[in-house]
Amino acid sequence: MSSQPLPHSLPQKNINTHLIEIKDYFKIAISVDCVIFGFDENELKILLIKSDLDQFRGKWSLLGDIVRTDEDPDDAAYRVLLTRTGIQDLYLEQVQAFGKPGRHPAGRVVTIAYYSLINIRHSILKNLDNELHWHPVKKIKQMAFDHKEIVDACYARLREKLKDHPVGFNLLPRKFSLRELQNLYEAILAVKLDRRNFRKKIMSMGLLIDLHEMEDDVPHRPAKLYKFNEDAFQKQENSYLGIDD
Amino acid sequence: MSSQPLPHSLPQKNINTHLIEIKDYFKIAISVDCVIFGFDENELKILLIKSDLDQFRGKWSLLGDIVRTDEDPDDAAYRVLLTRTGIQDLYLEQVQAFGKPGRHPAGRVVTIAYYSLINIRHSILKNLDNELHWHPVKKIKQMAFDHKEIVDACYARLREKLKDHPVGFNLLPRKFSLRELQNLYEAILAVKLDRRNFRKKIMSMGLLIDLHEMEDDVPHRPAKLYKFNEDAFQKQENSYLGIDD
Image 1 (cartoon, rainbow over the protein chains, first blue to last red):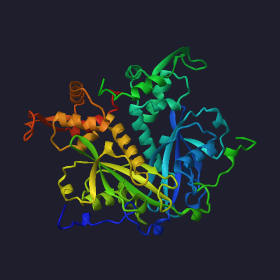
Image 2: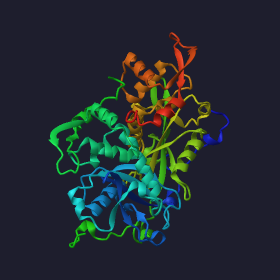
Image 3: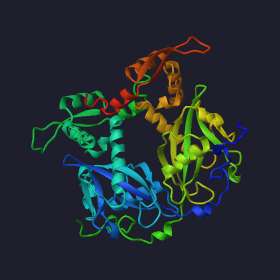
Image 4: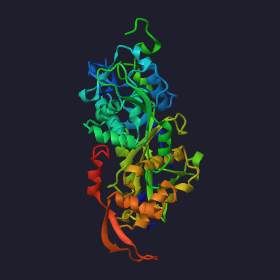
């Protein structure tokens, strides 16, 4: 198209189009890091482990591991989750890759971050290794490596998703009250919400099923219990949210 | 917490918590691949380049490259964009890392995919290297490597974002008609939309500024021109989309 080649139009040798000395580049390690959210005592928490590495002694770290030679990173993330918590039927969403040179003291390690939402009262978690602790997200200041940056990115992704998807339901027990649901939204979004408006909005989303049961064993006046309406949610996902109704 | 250690509670040596023989793992190369969307002739298109690698001769490939030794992957993505198209003031969003073993014939290469939205009529693009071509997304069947899978993931991310964010505006000229905007939504969502409903919805979003100008040089009846209302959009982003109004 151009008679005088501009710098950006010179043929570029790269790995997609031409053979290059790619063997010079196989020098990076890949890891996965899992940001595992739970909801407890009206606080959003993350499951962390203490780091024993010299540079980060005493600092908290995410659950993660190196990706093995013939392992897909997604599989590594599920492996970490299973090995550390015993849980396997959980969805891990890949969020972002963090590859700044120097992020890991041992050398060039690019990590892929995933997040998951756990019901903190899941029976399997009662047998958690005592090296692991749940930490309130808002109380996390310093962490090993760049894990605080990773937590921030995954937390932002969760807040973003919550605006349009009822992801929060995964953090609650199967049956929950509107108060619990509002506490959850407030914990994730880090804002106080007006009770009447919240209930109106949530009910209008059509994603709750009234179980015609009341809470029991609570210190306050028992409230109605609801559960998540998966079918209604699926139907909504398949429409273009207002554009074609 | 448990007197009998369960498999998942055995102390696990991994790179976050203990020193391991990490040097055995520095064997992977990292690349970036850019899915660059443009909108032309009422079709959503992607900028591709022909692959010359033996295995993929004649197949189309994404614009991408190896990440250099001391380079952040995000910087590599911008470098690829600048070197190939001359464009630098463009936002690249990281979408996903693809790390299946065997995805690249030259060895273990984990690639990080980004997407961007370009106004195809951007003046700089007039000088595009003639190795590069715009391809309608729906006509792309086979590509080099796993690039079709990467395109699918980025296209899904674009459709997802479009539901709640006016990302489409980046693909249009600064001034556009409602017809052009609807054509764009239809191209991205791959559906036909009802004209009256679309206009009602779009106007109700409050994100358009009526320029009080008409199209010119068009084969049909000239329509009104609008532009994107950035300020209104920012205000909306800062509210929780209905939860706290």
